[in-house]
Amino acid sequence: MKKDLYNPFIKFYFDNKTCFLTGEVLTKPSTYPVFPEWIVNEFGLKGQPFKMLDESYKTYEQITISCSPEVKKLLDQLDSEISNAFHKGFDEVKSLDKTRLFQWISKWVYGIIFNEIQGGIKQQALANEPVNFS
Image (cartoon, rainbow, N blue to C red):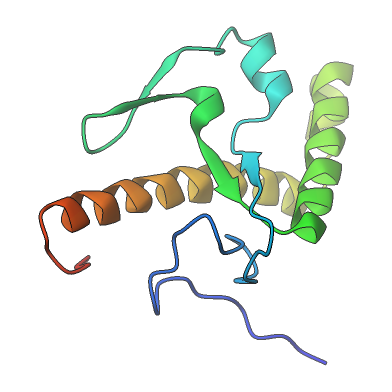
């Protein structure tokens, strides 16, 4: 059975009660780091500022996405696979499946965008404006 792809832009579900990837409503919301812990630790990013578009700052470890337990398990596997390759060296990274590497990098990009949109929604709510993104 083919599943439809989840599109959060239809109803702007960019909250922490919905899985960022599947759209599943989370009964017990949990977050997942956009930047893997090994990257944050290895490159000295813990506590370092990441400037958001609204001029606010988060630390690298504060940039998270909400996800279901099933998605968390898949992301853990993906992060582990990429981490193992990076720790073995360039040739191992070069031999990674290009789709897997793309998925890993896409989680970063989409995770940052997800957080930026959350910030935009909060700003518009504070100004008593409806959600309006072009």
